[in-house]
Image 1 (cartoon, rainbow, N blue to C red):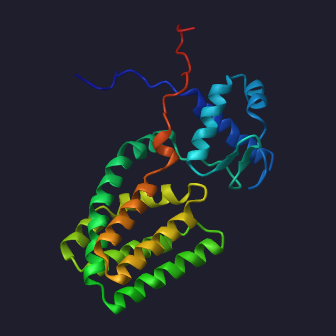
Image 2 (cartoon, one colour):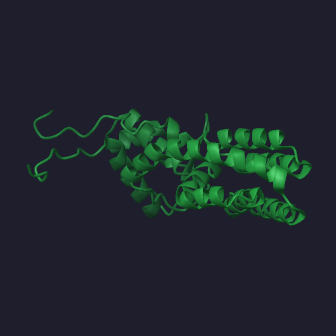
Length: 243
């Protein structure tokens, strides 16, 4: 039977709120650091419930576009609210747990092997990656490239060609998890500190300590707002005849 007449998806109300907020920020010439109107005011002006406004703000927060300061309001982190389509966000939320599970299994073992097999040259590359990430964060960035370099250096220091192939096979998904983690408030500096602990253990040749440090780090990486977000936690726009 043809799939053409399948039920039509109803737009989530908070997605419409996000679009109105995007238009508002653009027309009002707001910039990073500016404050959005309070949720109550937004709900009144848009003619929707506060729950729909709150869910829209959560989606924008998950994407690193706004910062919600408890008791202090919502502030722009960028000059625009060009948000990722919600369906793409939902799909990433669906696959992220599997990626994080694979990373913990692979990278914990890689850290253990790196502690056993690292060379002086490997340690130099690891240290350089730490320095690069430190500079990125110092310049106000999230440290994404430094993070990539560090984890790549751990993989190289393990001297396991097959495990390196496994890591390359999920490189795109790892990049997603990296970006998601490092845009959490306060996460870049915390990740850097955890990288230093991993490096210290590898440098000392302590395989158990290196594995434990990597496991702790990856469990921190897994703590992202996206996984706590429920995309269906909002009333949908009623279809004709439903009202």
